[in-house]
Structures are given as structure tokens and as C-alpha cells.
Image 1 (cartoon, rainbow, N blue to C red):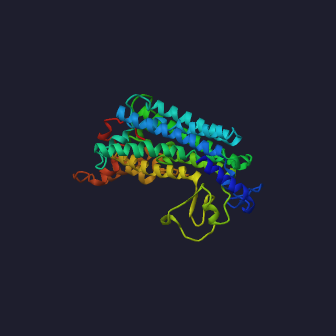
Image 2 (cartoon, rainbow, N blue to C red; image 1 turned 45 degrees about the vertical axis):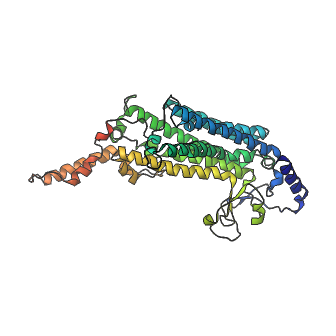
Length: 419
């Protein structure tokens, strides 16, 4: 295999004079430095060895998680490694990239992300023996997964294999930065943009996790309650702070952190497009999409970096971020289905607040929930006075308006997690 790769690389080096050059663009802005379209000749055997080493490490994590789940009968071993494995992958790519400045910067950002997320997971008891994500127990009750073989297959294919492969793919920008082609491009303003975006969403996720942690601690009597959250304590879920703008600001931030890492690919020449689709087909890092996903068959370049030929191909380094966003769409919907079954007023919260993307202005209904509840009570008292002569029992109108802020009987049994 290595001889074959060497032969291919030698061929492209000897025929490099026929390759076309073009200026690289990002969102229509011309770079200060010209950048030729990268070809397979720009990638060395060291880069292939880096991917091979990281792939072996990923395989070790998959086997460990699967065997550990069989022994312990718990299925959150991937969750315990979620914040750690990207750190190892980024260090591998940094080593094979000869500790170039861009790889070191990306590894440092991933390291601080992993340390914070590990601490947040640990304080919630995620590393305690026998601890398991509450959603797996609900999922095991599904008809297709309630058999021993069905759950075993799901455990290996999705929980262990797919999730670990996803963690490997989201660090693909680090593999790109380790290539000789990317190392030729010095740090520029787009690396600064990527760093600032990463730190912004990192801090947003930190604030959201801290708000949720303080609320859950006070909700179950482990910390002092605050008066401004009294209605949320009764409802059973947090709807203030960042959660007044988005139902899951931490989920949104987690996705954007890895999309921010993709900006490093653009900064290091990943936005350079070939001049024809035939050129793109000769390079491994342009992935051709199935015909059913193509917008058209014409050969033109769209304005979004990484997409070309009418959405016919996608840069390999973006695959991880795309799959992560799709995973969060499914897992968030499943999480909310469970939460809505536990808390009656959660459906009203869903109608008022976005699921992921934060609103610039939070809805007034949840911005001051106590005032809203007070106004509802006054409106009902006024209606009651006008109907004082009647002795009929209040109808459905009264029950709907008084349901907000009233403690539900389903909240008597606390759950371990709400997010």
C-alpha cells in the first residue's frame, strides 16, 4: 500500500506543471496571498500516517466502549470519553504536523474545551460507577430495540462505532492543518476569526451549563433557591437566562464550536476550489455526494466555501460538523419528547422559545414569568367578580390559565437530569 502511495505521489510531482493555479477566495473576499489549488502531491506519507495512527486510536476506543458496556450493562462509556478523545486526536495530528503553529493553536483550543466539558460531566456524577444516560433506558423500551439482539446491534453500531467515528471526524480540520500544503500558509486573519468564534461559543456553552447546574442544584434542595426562579422550580425546568432565548443554548454552542474549527480549514487553503469538476474528482478530500442530494448537474462554483459543482461535492473536513449537527437534531427532539411528558407546561415553553438558535430578544412571556402569572390571576379575579351571581364551577378557561405556575403532581418524583 505504501509503495502504491509513493508511486502516485511521484506521478503527481512529475506532472505538476500541467496543474492549474487559481486565486483562493473566502465569501467573495480576495486573500492577500495567492494560493494554488492543492492536489494529492501536496500531501505526504507523514500525513497518511497521522490519519492511520488516529484511526487505530479510534478503533481502540470503539472496542473498549463496546466491551465495557457488555461487562457493566451500562451504555454511557462513550459519554465518559466524549470530551477526551478529540484531545488525543488533535495531539496526534499536531505531532505529525511537526508542531506547526496552526496545529498547536487548534490543539490548545480543543484541550480547554475538553477540560471544561469533563469537569461539567464529572460534577453531574457522569463518572460514577453504574451511572447511565437516562435516555438509554427509555430507548430500550422501543419495540425495535427491546430484544437482546436488537439492542446489542444498536449498542455496537450507533452507540460505540458511530459516535466514536463522529468524534474522529470532527477533528478532521486538525488533520488538514498538519498537511504540508496547509503548513505553507502562515497564520492569517481568518485564523483569528476562527479562534474568536471558538472562544465565544465556548464561553456561551460554559454560561449555559453553569445556569442549568445551579438551577438543578436548587431545584432538588442541594443549594439555596432564588426568588426569581420560583416559577421555574414549580414548572420543573429552567426558562430564564440563556434558556429564555433558546431551549438548549448549550447544545447550540457545542455544534458551533466544531463549525468554528472548520474555519481553520478555510484559513489554511481549504477554500481553494478547482477549475473543473474533473480536477476535484482526482483529489481524495473532495467527497462526491449521491445523485439524490445534488442540486443540479451543471459545473459551476457556489459562493459557500467547500461546496462546488452545484452542491455535487463537499470538503471532507466539513463532514464531521455536518454529522454532529444532524445528531443533535435527533437527540434534542428525543430529549424534549421525554421532558414534555414529565412537565405539563413544557409544551407552552416550546411554543414561545426556539429549540436551538438563540433569539436576540427573549419572549416576554418567559422574560418575566412571575409578572405574567400575576396578570393572569388578576384577569381571572376580574372575571370572577363579573360572574359573582353565578354558582357554576369554573370551566376549562380557568384551568388553562391557572395551570401555569402550579406545581404538577408529576414533579413529586425528581429525575436525575433534565437536559
